[in-house]
Amino acid sequence: MRCTSKRNKAIAAVISACILLNGCGSIAYEVPYDINTNVSAFRFESADTERTAKSFASDICVVSEDVIAGEEIETGSESYGSAALFDVNNKRVVYAKNATAQLYPASMTKVMTALLAMKYGNMDDVLTASENVLIQESGATLCGFKPGDTMTLDQALHGLLLYSGNDAAVMIAEYISGSVEDFCNMMNTEAARLGATNTHFVNPHGLHDENHYSTAYDLYLIFNEAMKYPVFNEMIHMDTYTTNYKNSAGEMVNITYNTTNRYLKGDIQPPTEVTVIGGKTGTTKAARSNLILLSKDSAGNPFISVVMKAEDSDILYLKMNSLLKVID
Image 1 (tube, rainbow, N blue to C red):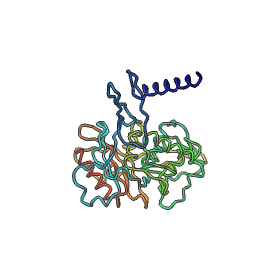
Image 2: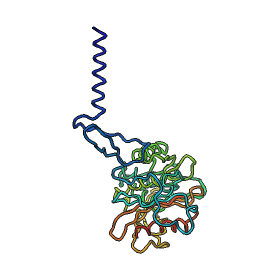
Image 3: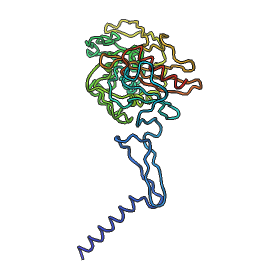
């Protein structure tokens, strides 16, 4: 009797499981996000109906392969590492070449730093520079902050996004998390949350490290999220910014930040019907020349474009303009 009872219970459990798995009735089951898939929706069937469950990617562009629109630029595809163009409103990949290739993002890293600052910080909070702002790496762009200097998060973000100050990135990281190491953990957690699973950060500024990498597609995901904050869109659109902050002696220091974006400087002209809003540049010896950009067509529709590892600045903007011509 005891064995029979156990057998009956086991059979009942199996039947119940089958009913649940086959989706009988009108019960809806949530489909979890799988970081190993690149499709934008999951489909499953039951005996009586077919249902589609919405995934995390239902409101973003999804890259699964190269998408070529028109011909390559005159310099050829070998002159850059990857490139992509995304139609933000229609969630459409207009162009993609090596968009999931892991490359060094250089200072485009600072978009993630800004995103976390906007998400968790207060623009009026006062930041104090530590000894860690004294970055010694040759060629590193610095705002010139010294230990003990104080400024608001708003001021530091301008230095980060316009001038690409690596010392500003360190100040912001330590303000948000207490240390650069903890901030990088936050960066990687946020990247995973956004689906940027081919990205790994080890610093908040993008100075070269072999273990610091991203992709054109992942950078789109991060930039797209940052665009949700009006202050981000305002800052990346500025060509210059002047402010005053206090040094360790309490004296006022006047500083002007100029953009690194050649479109906003007026050095490069976009296609006729395209308006460049702004973006983030990135340059190191290993990463070469990089740019992620927000632009709008004549109807005001937003597009995000990315070019990574261009041979030099001229080729970078030549390729970027070839992308923008597609939306002209």
